[in-house]
Amino acid sequence: MERIYHHSSYIKEFTALVTGCREGRDGRWEIILDRTAFFPEGGGQPCDTGTLGEAHILDVQETGGEIIHYGDRPLTEGSQVRGQICWQRRFENMQGHSGEHILTGCIHRRFGYDNVGFHMGSEEITIDMNGILTPEELDEMELEANAVICENLPIHVLTPTAEELEKMEYRSKKKLEGEVWIAEIPGVDVCACCGTHVARTGEVGLIKVIGMIRYKGGVRISFLCGRQAVLHCQKRQKQVAAVSAALAARQDEITEAVDRLKEENGRLEGEISRLRTAEAEAKAAAFPEGDGLLAVFEEMDPVQLRKYCTMLYEGRKGSIVLACTRKGEGYQYVLGSAFHNMGNLAKKMNSCLNGRGGGSALMAQGTFQAEENEIRSAFCRCAGEELK
Ligand SMILES: [Zn+2]
Image 1 (cartoon, rainbow, N blue to C red):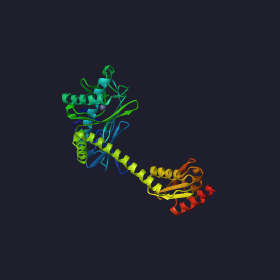
Image 2 (tube, rainbow, N blue to C red; image 1 turned 60 degrees about the vertical axis):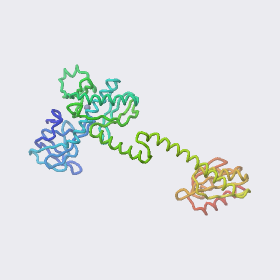
Image 3 (tube, protein in one colour; image 1 turned 90 degrees about the vertical axis):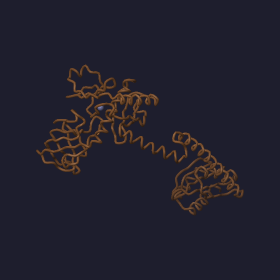
Image 4 (tube, helix red, strand yellow; image 1 turned 60 degrees about the horizontal axis):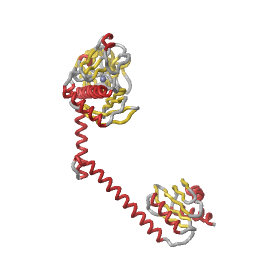
């Protein structure tokens, strides 16, 4: 079986003989040809899509040395068929794959790190390098990779003999069976590779790094090449423009504007918290002094509710205070007392009111799945026993 993409990655149309066609799963047909320009998924590069005669080819896989084209309809065995690959997708894959060799080659040349993982996804291309780069070093490598694009160097795809291969210095050197393909960018990179490449580095157009994370003792670098890189920059530019408009700040000053916004937000949160505490204090002070049971129901956040409960029981030493606020179908509660064990009381009330939670002697908190009147009467009953 002839792999046309190996002689030239620029062949978009070809004719071939259908040597096999069988029904596969999910209504797809598995088509085998005597020669193909369709690149099967492999080595980190996605497969080509396109058409074979009337059939749309949605996926191409290689299994056991056989290239299977997954089509949406059957083709007649023994017939000649015209194949056409989706060129935009293929060319973008070529830009991405060649770009990967350029960037990896630059990092390998400078730092000696190896690429131990490569994936071309629909959103980004990732490479896993087995060493650490700082963000500044990555910026430098990005510029260097783009300088290699400007040099417009040839990308040679070689098929050396076993003896030649033995003497060659290249990345991904491991025992490879059968014919080995080597992609060489003079002075930049030599690597065993089965993918498709552009003829010269200039065709990659642009290499844009979009992220880096620590990964397995090294780093995972995300980037885009060529048309995909430009599309990404367009999208980011629109986002920056939108953020800039929303903040009423110049585009190159949005970071400072967001910092100011966060600072202002923090100040306002502090102010809200101060006002809420003052409000709770005022409410607590409005309750008449005295011992006994006190149940209050208020709209409050959990932190305020705890503070409120504390103010109430500290103000009336012999009392037991229950403070509740709505939470979903039930109530969030806080129980507080200076002299009675709230952990025990919470246990009793939880069992009456389908509740959860607990706490210390001074304070307990949790939730009740019950109505206000049920909570009030359970409190009178259970807390009343505590006071006796
Ligand atoms: Zn490769």
